[in-house]
Image (cartoon, rainbow, N blue to C red; front, side, top):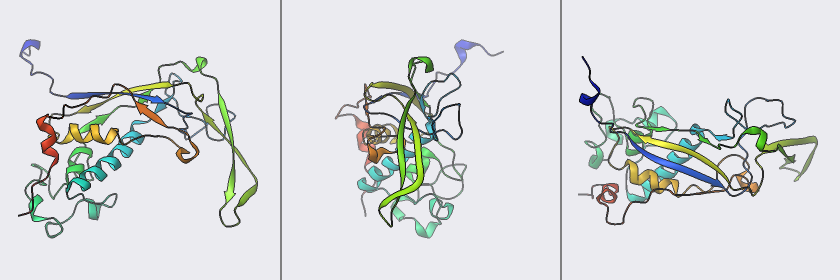
Length: 237
């Protein structure tokens, strides 16, 4: 018989996220939901605005890769499986032992051990960031655009389109979590917290000023926290 008091404690760590959108947000959906826009904004089943977990995780992985490389870690190139899961002769001798994972063949860099690769499953779970405001309380905002001919540097004929965005300058809050599984590397939490602080915009048309954000209440590790030391790889012999 299984009793609740004998169950082991939950060892999953959670990082709470609150993104405050400083400008209008444009995260396009694949199809139409009745909007007049050519590219409607993505929503969940309740009609609430959201930033998909896949987009946040992909951007976070990119930022964490840059930080890890800057600190001296050997990071394998994605998205090709041939470079993301290299052979022994392609791996620096400093990382041969550290980049082996019990139960999985091959070598897996620090980023792959956190975010996964074609062989190794991800050790983190990222939630969608959801704005709790109901659809009826947010007006539909259409932003016009036109396709540009890069060669002639002029607008194309009959190429007007409309994007649906969130209302501008409303400081909309999007909330979610990142869950760190018990078997994730010790470098996971400090690396993710550092990577999040490098993300200043999400969604489409960022160069046009859409999707710029700031993180509110993001967890901060103390400067004397020992976990920071795990981010430094072994020195070269």
